[in-house]
Image (tube, rainbow, N blue to C red):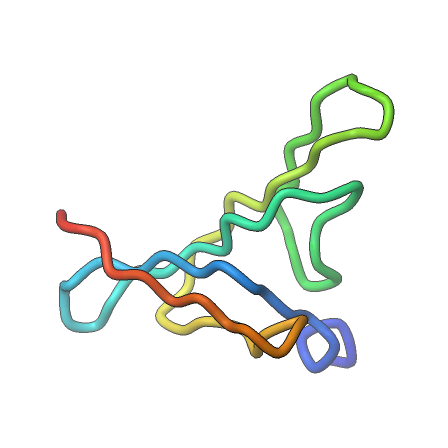
Length: 72
């Protein structure tokens, strides 16, 4: 849907496995629009992070996309 099209991530971590397992580790006041498992702390403003995993990364929200590979 439109939520997936508008979802974005600046810092995406992926494993080296094939297919990779990727997770957006951006922290912000809310999670991206396609996030199903969003966890926020109770600070003001809230610090939220999405814990969904995918076989891909969403497009960058800003121009400097960071994609890192983490070891399994």
